[in-house]
Every structure is written in structure tokens, then in C-alpha cells.
Image (cartoon, rainbow, N blue to C red; front, top):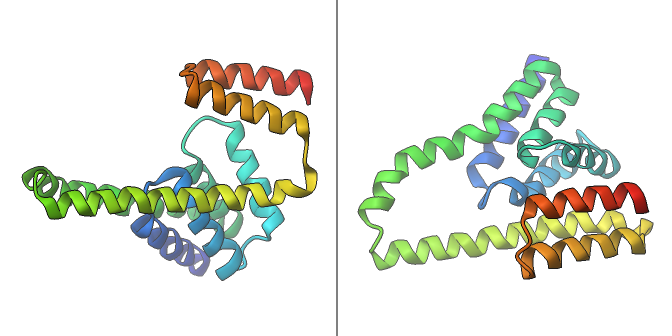
Length: 176
């Protein structure tokens, strides 16, 4: 149990340290670490746990780290996963806040921050791709249509995300 907890600490600590954009952008890193590198989960198990995280409010990567930690090392693994995922970013934010505010007008910092935004977007796109692949075999035109309608409503028509999610959930219950 102690060995597994330490492995969770190392794995999620590395993810927390190197992920750009946080949250859903971490999903590809979590999948790579927990499915491909460590073999803690199969692809199907990862997709299933990820689906469970979407049922409840809160940060997806945090909930996923908790569930994976719980599966691998019990309650100590759950706590280790959540802490290790979050502490690197929090510590870096506290340490680097002064640098960023002091040099916020510096060209080099603007370039770094712009690059980080594009990096975060790339990780988010990779996570989206990883999420979409398992759905290819179970294509539901109704579910895809509802997802597209939610995207268009929130992203293009400026519908409140809260209203969009509520309508989406009700439509899923009624139509799927």
C-alpha cells in the first residue's frame, strides 16, 4: 500500500507539474500515465472512470485523480492523488506570481504566456481526441446532436453554460 501510494504521489505530482491549462487539459497526461505507462487501468476502465467524473460537479482531473488513487492504493492513494495533482501548480502560482506581476509588460513574458496558452490548447485538443475515440464504436446520432446543440448554444449563441447544461441533462434523460 505504501509503495502504491508513493507511485501515485510521483505520477500525479509529475502531471500537476507539467500540465498546461489544468483541468481537462490534464486528461491526456493522466491517461498516458495511468493507462499507457503504469498499466493501472485499461482504456475501458479509464473511459468508465472519466464518465463517472462527469456525473458530479467539480474539477474533472481532481475527481479522476481521486478515483484512480482510490483504485490503486485505497484512501491514502486517493488523498495522495488529489494533493500531488494540485500542489505543484499552487506552489508555482504562489512563487511565480511576483515575477509575473513585476514583468507583466516584458515582451519575453508575453511570449512565454502566449506559448503556454497554445500549449494548453494543444493538450486540451489531445484530451478531446482521447475522449472521442472510445465513442466512435458507439455512435449515437441523438447524443452527438445534443452535444453539438450544447456547444453551439454556449459557444456561439452565448447561452448561459448553467442553463445549457441543465437543458442538456434533461434532454439526455428524455431522448437517450
